[in-house]
Length: 93
Image (cartoon, rainbow, N blue to C red; front, side):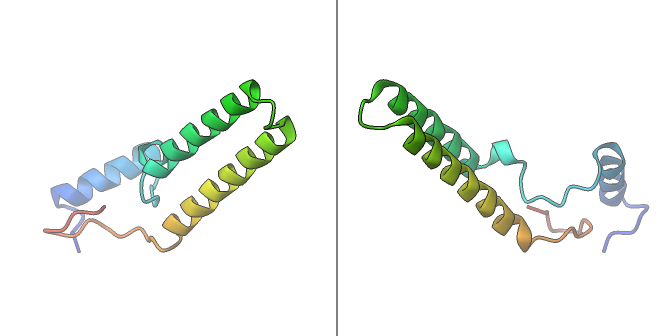
């Protein structure tokens, strides 16, 4: 465990003071799941706008299901993580 006087611990403490403790695995827009969800929602909404067979209600239902699945996947990803202090010789991911 890093002592409070070491540079890594000082940087972590400074970062937490500036933006708060970040226990998240990754910031959401940096994940592949976010961009896959975003692209899929855009494709569904465009398809609903130009297609006669995909009605509005079905399109919005699909968008809601995709959004809920994304929220659940982020919850599962963050569920097992715990904030640990910076350790010497090992980077946090």
